[in-house]
Image (cartoon, rainbow, N blue to C red; front, side, top):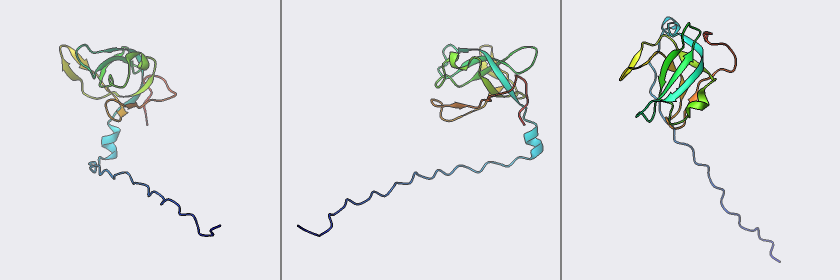
Length: 133
């Protein structure tokens, strides 16, 4: 019977994830940030924009007399029925953006991630029109 230690396989050294250098954002003042009107919105309806693979057209209640039309590049991640009823974060004072053929967006929803795996900024409580602070 041998008393020599049994050789053990070498432990694998963990591979560190590559460090991604993000550009340093240009600082803004508190007053500039305060000019952004972030509100809670409730998605009332949502449908695909014909001939546009990435775009959805949403009707969003932001606490005004009429719902706003917001066009968002969410179609690669979300089916329209997944968004109806959700409380979302809306940039309410963004200048309207024309997409052509009468399609105009009157706000922006906040999201992060690649186009095919977006995470939508949402709130769990609140009512349409509530301002985010």
